[in-house]
Length: 255
Length: 314
Image (cartoon, rainbow over all chains, first blue to last red; front, top):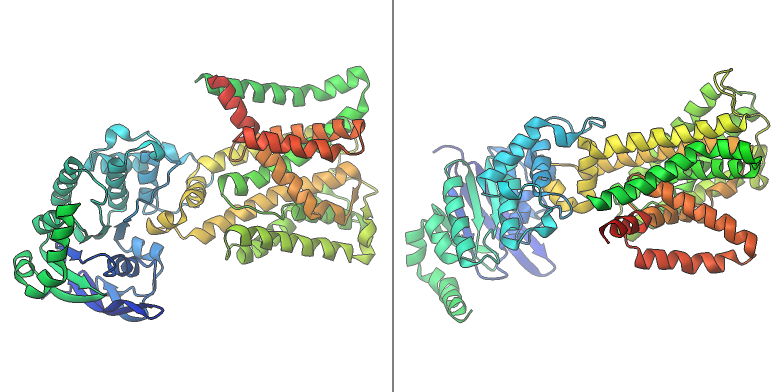
């Protein structure tokens, strides 16, 4: 079997007495969409943060394309082809949508220690930005300041920003969070398109979306992976049902 | 669009006033006003340099007056040691400021928020006490610059009008540079870091090195203001580095409008004219000045430039 694109081995992260990530191992091969699900507080975001480099693990390793990146800072990982979206939208609020995406393109197109030429007039950066905005269906909002975009549009912009860095692997932390029904459907459709081009690690609460999209699913409970497999296997797994799906269904019915 | 024209019109008016001021001074025989405005222009330059890191970069440096002192002492000390050439004094002033900014920046940028403010303040106070301890160069009493920087016939700094125009040219040159910088790749990165550092790291920008370079550029520009200031007053003392002076510069930037090109100029003009005017009326001018500034900051969010923008929108 080929070397997986992303390999996580025995990752451990503690916060005081709580082990938020407890010997987590998982592989993501090229072209795969790997979903990570789990109840609230299972440590999903903690895990993602260690993959992106915003948090250091206490033990274990992360490698990307065979290269150990466990302790590389976030910006170096990004340069190696790892891009992320944030669970809570994290954008440059006082910049336009196009500026947000163009900056991501700029980070991967030569040095940014250029002090004199107007960066907003660099054709290649603007084109890359518009291509990425087009990809997520936001090109008509390119010149709008982010603070004036709707929540749904910001989620899509997060994705465009991640895409503009031409990543090998996308880490998406709850891209559907807070989206309405139609917006969610659009997002699912978008991800279905994107997964043909790039490997994706998807952390998501929206179960129908996860089961529709994922090649493989890992279930995280109390920081541990209790099951990993294709959607059918996960759906049939008793431990998963007990620990997670059952509760979640009750919650969604009431919510 | 109308909003743009109002603030632009006022800016153009103020700039035209600055350009024509020597003419007025000559015609009216009012020499004092030229001296006053030379000082205003120099401090506007210092405020503009502070605005680059504070307004555009989001780095609240509370020690910017240190560069006024460093630039000034570079001129004063070299003059005292017999090096009168401006071609040496000015580059040394800029280089010394850049070096100080590099060291201070590298240390200070490890911190954020209030800690950054406090540490830049602390370093500036250290510079203040070092200057006070320079017994050979006047210590607490300061150092008289007996001869202004000599640019061997190119320009005579002792000519009031010539010197004023030199300062104004430096101010406009620096604003032009800042304008280019904030719209460049580098400038967008620095402003992005002000807006959301975590996001910028995630898309692949190492925050600190961009901020440090910006910090050094800003400090170097302010060092130029310091060299000019020493020539203007023929004197340099530790007092120019005192923390209240750093505070004055911050007030000018906030008053004029942070992150706007000409805001610091507006701020410096209004602040220093008010100070001049009020101190003629009463000894307790600060009692009036304080509340006045509070009002402008409270009700004029975005400073003078912000007010002008809103006035245009009606």
